Image (spheres, helix red, strand yellow):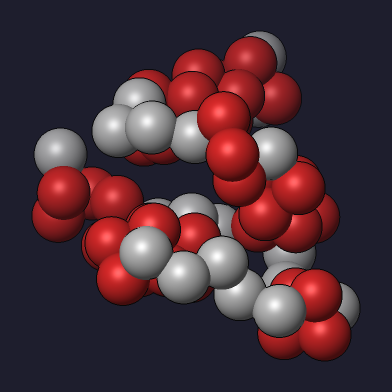
Length: 63
């Protein structure tokens, strides 16, 4: 699962920051995708289920 997370452009910045234990500054999120910004907003609620959430959202979007 970690490899899938690293390849997912939308969540990679958040995953890397979570692993480092440092929330990115708001100005660093301005040029990111809407998905990335959303995960930044809900930073405090994120756990290791990030890939599952992104894959479910993506599946539903293209139905």
